[in-house]
Length: 181
Image (cartoon, rainbow, N blue to C red):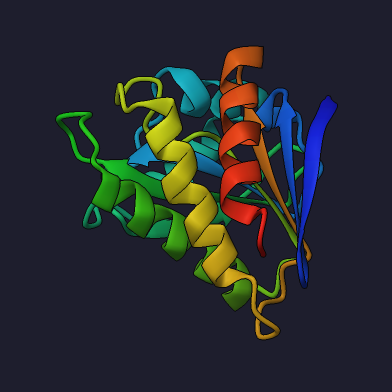
């Protein structure tokens, strides 16, 4: 894992890295899920492959939920203790700015409920969902910035992205949005 850039958002440190979310050692990793929580390809497939099918079974037992909501499961064989499954899309596998925002906010709130100090997110909806990377970056980074208050238990939010181009886009957007923070 190579850290591209870190941004201080007191009390949170925001990191943007190019890496494998399923390999993260944060307290929790976030799965970009559908509202029924079955784990197919992309981020979900990588998490299931590394962590085990029990993660999928535990998540599906809590669904379906409204798109934008999230649930938490154990981490199976992952280094992370938990997986937060954020329903970024419905069964049609389509997403929107509103769903990405709600899923990000609800995942951050779930981390606080469990008093987690670190969490790793993928770029929501940019794979199967086909959502534009730059718009996703703006939505997710704004939500993280808004969550960076003294009340949060989080100290590290890591955006774990697939590929140099996606990483560079997130880093550019973060620099724009957080310049005056």
